[in-house]
Every structure is written in structure tokens, then in C-alpha cells.
Amino acid sequence: MTASITLVLFDMEGVLSHYDRSARVAYLSAVSGQAPETVRHAIWESGLEARADAGQISDDEYLSALGDLLSCRVSRDDWLAARRASITPNTEVLALAAKVAERHRIAVLTNNCCLVADHIGYLNPAVARLFCPHVYASASFGAAKPAAQTYLRCLEQLGVGAAETLFIDDTHANVAGAIAAGLHGYKFVGAEVLSEELERRRLT
Image (cartoon, rainbow, N blue to C red; front, side):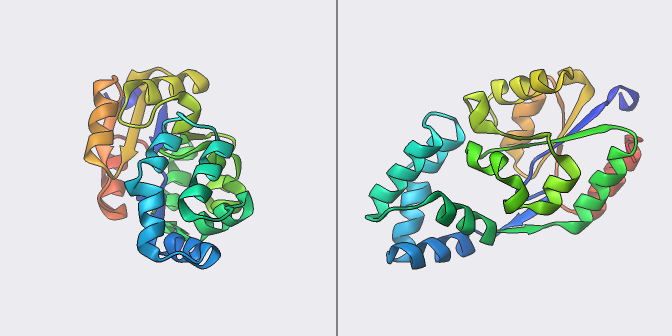
């Protein structure tokens, strides 16, 4: 089993980086003049973010709809600045990924709109340095994790088979979706136990 893994596919937020939704909300609240609860509703509770992550709307449509919900114009620069404020690299996990990369291929598959992958160098420079150009947003595959096509279309881009891939995510449903699609899966709970798992699989 362990010898067959040629690619380790990482989730980004919650694994390679810490995600602070409150920082994102605070930034957009200041930009829009809307209360934080209004911002949270616009992004998540309205279903807008999920539609964008699944590629059901374009980036421009997403920004326009978000502006409508917040009763203001949300520029691309403002949206990116808010997202950047929410991201802090997980240096321990990035160091493990760098060790994996010495002998195996690595890539990122994140549930996000295409803005995140297209601007990863600004949003998360540490991830960009290690993984680019292999940072993929679910929106580009027309579905979000845990849908099977998200993983499989990503692997098509990479030219790697599902059985050769280990997928790491902090969400049980996404790991289960990967396994159902034929990948190996591992639920991330911390850097120390991930290090042990990678060693067990002879990937570091």
C-alpha cells in the first residue's frame, strides 16, 4: 500500500494554514459598514460561498452578488485582502510537506473559488512557494469536496491515478469522499500525528 503512493494531495485551510473566519468578517465589515453578522450571513448562510466553491457562478458573479448582499461594491482587491487576513501558514505542516516533496509529488486541493488559486502568491505565499503551480480550487472542477468529480478531475490535471494518491483533509466528510472516489485518505488532527502517519507510509 505505502509503496504505491506517488502523490500527496493536501487540503489548505485547516491543514497547511490556519483559517480565521472572524478576521475575514471584520475586514469586510469595515469595508461595507455592515455588522459582522450581516457579513457572515452574506458569505456563508446565504449559500453564496458554497455556490462559488462549487463553480456554479463565476468570480465576477460572486463578487457582484456579495456586494448586493452587503449593499456596497466589493472590489476584487478588498475581497483578496479580507481573505489574506484570514490565513496564517501552519509552518509545522508545511515543513512536513516539504519533506514529502523531496521524494514524492505534492499538490493542494482546496474548496474555494478560483480567486484563491489564481492569487495564491498574495494570499498564502508560503503555500505558493512550496506547491505552485499545483494549487487547485474546487470551483475549477465544477464541484466542491466531497463530490467525487472534484478529486478525480484534479487528479486528471495532475496525471496521477486515484490509487496512487493520499489525500489529507481536516474534515471527515472530505476524507470519506476521497476514499469513496478511490484515493487513500487521512483525517488531519495535528502536525505531530501527521508526521507519524507519513513516516508509517514511508512518505518522509
